[in-house]
Structures are given as structure tokens and as C-alpha cells.
Amino acid sequence: MADACLDLQDRRGCDVNILLFCCWLGASGRPTLTAERLRGILKASDAWQSEIVKPLRAVRRLLKDRSWPEALPETVDAVRRRVADAELAAEHAEQLKLAALHTPPADRDRPIEKRLRAAVGNLGVYAVCLGVTPDARDRAAVATLMRATFPALLAEEIDRVVGPAN
Image (cartoon, rainbow, N blue to C red; front, side):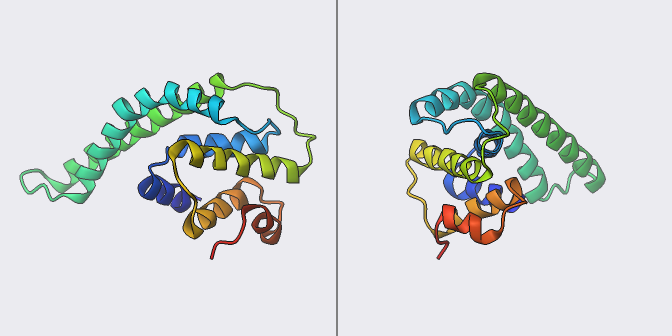
């Protein structure tokens, strides 16, 4: 699931927390988001994402990808781990904010196929908000997310809802 989220993040500019939020809403039996509602949620989380999470991610990646000959490798690694911890804490804070922004009641008794369709629908609404037309790679990533979100379902059931990945 992590690889699918990171692929969508790097290739399509998705916020992993929004991806997970869309999955959680559907899995918990909440109704599918409207584009208007999701745009409001995105607006509320965009500043935190762009001013806090993304700069932390950039620093973490810089520490990982660049050589720092003037510093001891173990020191650079320790700093990178602390920045990664701060990035995770910032993402957790965003998840809490997202959960507080959209709180219709959950319906765990809703049939699992309807919950699957809601989760996929939420991701489709997110694609619309991003101006993305999903391709085969996107559908494959969404199928991976759905398999992790709905482990009781067979891959064929998920693929029927997500659509072909080729």
C-alpha cells in the first residue's frame, strides 16, 4: 500500500493523507464525498501540507539523497530520522484535522460492496479535484489501496469496481 500511495504522491501530486482519508470514509460506511465538499477539505489542509509537511519531506529527502562529506554519516542519519519523525507527526496532525472536518456518522452495517464503491468514488472525486484523468497505473494503485482497505474482498471483486489496470 505504501508504494501505491507514494507512486500517486510522486506522479500525480496526491496528498497521501487525503488518499487514506478517502479510503477510510468509504470503509467506515460514510457517503461518497462531493467535489465541492472535498475541495473545502483540501483547502483546509493545503496550507498545512504545503507549509509544514512538504518542507519536512524535502529536508528528509535531501538528507537521504545528497552526500554530506563535511558531516559524520551517523550524525546525518540521526538528523534525517528526527526530521522523518517530525514529518510523520505533522502528517498525523493532518489526519486528525481531516477526521474532524468531515464527520457524517459511520455505517459499518452498510454492505461491503457499497463501502468499496464509496471509497473508490472518493478517490475518483479526488482525481477530479486534482484535474487528473486516471490511467492504468492509477487504477492499479487504487486497486492496491482497495485490497489493503478491504482485505476480506477478492481481487476480482475489487477489480470489477476499480476497472481494468491495463
